[in-house]
Length: 486
Image (cartoon, rainbow, N blue to C red; front, side, top):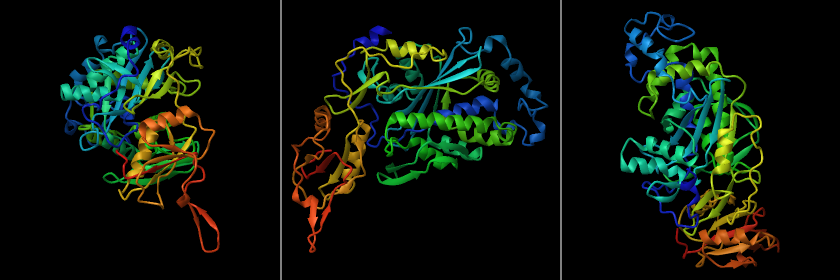
């Protein structure tokens, strides 16, 4: 495995995947549907739902199996055969890749913005989640350096219906980890799942707003969350988990990954509650919704085994997010084609793989390696306001979203009072901003860098009072001119 990742040329351009997405807002936690199947003990995709009893009293309140199994007797025998256990159980580590994608009808339907390795340690009844950022640069067989979220898309392009299997193989090779199983889900299943169990309760650690949350078509809307414990419907939980342009420190993929894990934990608690777990009709409704929105390579017996194991989970879920913080394992940089890419600080995956393998150990390293690397991080400390100096509707918002995707902190977009502006210009309001940030920004938005703001950004009224036409929090103001090329 080491040979695959060590020979990557991190500076090579990265062509777009087969199904590129102009709006990258699909970050959500559909992988949690896996827990529904596990905890409900009803992995019944090989059985017809109509065959199951509709009266709750006909079910065993503990196992949720019909009391009079009749035709299910053969299924019962199959489930408990010793050779029907999961691969990895003998080594006390069961790994499952959880993938979340937009699905047919969405932009970039097969790009997976949720990528989590779910690990189960049977001997201790512990579960761990390792969130892998979508922008991680990895080697795809035959395609060179690509972002890891495109693995499923390439797999689908080559063999429709097999994207999940191809992604599973890529993740296993990249992290030198035995990952025999995958589960892939889409938008609709998530929202219906949350509603089916009566919503979830989430303790939001800090308030934030996202003015660039995707709306109808290619529009944007503003969503906000207050701090504190609150009940969420499927739609609200979806927005909370998908948001990736929030303020107050919630505007990164890494913050979103932590919110995804938080909602998963809340859902686990709801599913384990007496009212949900012992209501087979509710489980039946959930499964009916999932029929066309989930694919996996786990069979009925394997799901039944995991369901029984999950009931005995001890302690909280161990959580690990691969990120580019000071104590993280990754660096970020802008590729020659303007793409935002995450790379290992040590230029190989050895330390990352070691941490993943030891995720259940209390002695797992908390601090990332400090081996020098030629790839220096791009900091997101600079606040950037993008102003639309053209009459093209939504141009500033789209560009701000692109900057946010690239790791910058983009403030809410606005329209320039001086429009139309002929030439795109980057105005440096804070002279202390690192030159590397300016250089990285200039690769995405090409234009001269000025230190003096134009006169039209300060309007003087008849009373000789001045009004600033820019966000005073901004360190950098980008004005998009008519020469700007998206």
